[in-house]
Amino acid sequence: MKDFKEFLRVGEARRQRPNIDRAKSLITEATQKKAYLELTIKTIPKGKRNPNVIAEQCYDIIMEILRAKMFLDGYTAGNSHEAEVSYMKILGFNESETRYMDELRYYRNGTKYYGTILNIEYANKTIEFLNRIYPKLMKIVK
Image 1 (cartoon, helix red, strand yellow):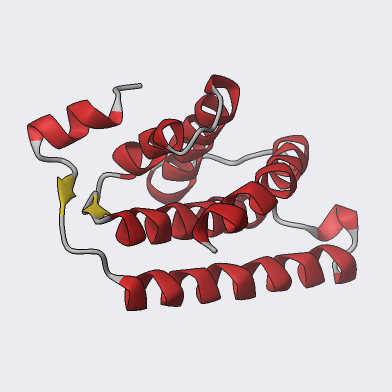
Image 2: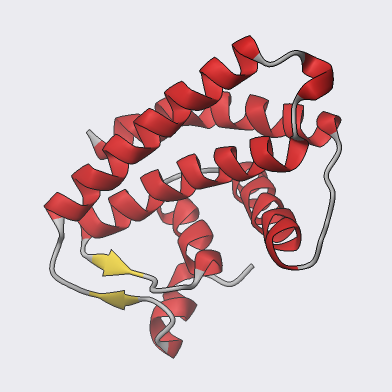
């Protein structure tokens, strides 16, 4: 994965004035989606859960918080999800966490545009990942 500075250099990410209102909106949305995901997991039996939906919800929650932090810090990556994921390194996430998030980005893209079907084991792994990094993400945007 490219370094965030490289995304800045080539114009896929850029500086902008901090957008606190947009950041707050994204944080609220992510918090609501997390609560909804937790309710879904509690109420839908394991055998009836849709792995693609679970993975996509986890991805969206994480990305909305990352985007919020970028807005707070005065950055935007436009449509470059890869640049947003690379920003995790700037925020102090380790290589393993950043690599997993990039993998999730790749698989989520596959489910959205290429018909990729994920299995429940991957969805469960993604829930575990979300639960592990969510507190850290929320701490950096408070």
